[in-house]
Length: 335
Image (cartoon, rainbow, N blue to C red; front, side, top):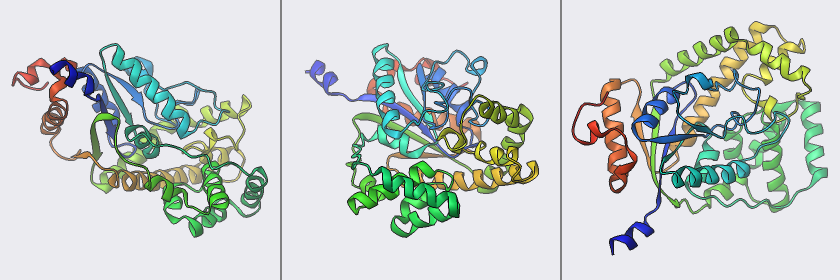
């Protein structure tokens, strides 16, 4: 009877989400070591090779021996979609589990993470190349903000989620409405929101002023680390300005500077502003997700860590063999 129950048990899946610069990276390493986990990047931009600085990709030497998945898996000129991520992430989860490890998704791309957590089914709704071309020409003639305003008129929730620079996804949302008469946001809300996994989702938050200060510091560090040179190198290698990868934060703004459309100072200020707005959208997305246990990163970190371990142990109480932190499970001190 116990054997039958074990077979019916869902696969445990640990998830850590939160806005950019909130502190996910270091905490993920600590948790991965404590719970014998392998990390799956839940970031839509870290899949791209040669895009390290602008995506805040953790260097291999700093990963502390923790295996990371879905990083550097496609070329910058390839369009990588949420459906692609869902397939690859499911494969990674199965692979990690088969080797007796705990799958651990870490990232801030809400739709990507949620699509895996709750098994979203994507209806492609067909395509209309002529309509796409028309929208692209409209954006070229009137600007990204004007195209974004078009989406806001027919699907305000999707417009709130998508950055004006994300033209490919904006055009896709417009195309879905054009073809089906239904908003993309409505299709997402209709998803069953039941997980095929035994989920433990942790969400990180902090005071907005502190978060914004951390964002600005991160941008300054990216510039010191060579963000301009990274973007220039991508352009020189033939990655086009309108590719999906180059629409990411940190790339679009620096391209504007390299094209002579603004000063470096103006590009940096624009990047800081856009990143603050992105963090706000991330929090808005995650606040609407269910099952998240929120952790305030402004509180005592030691107490936070004990609470986090307690949450994970409670969620995975029948799966404690995944943890290597026996001192915690035996009532000892968390290091």
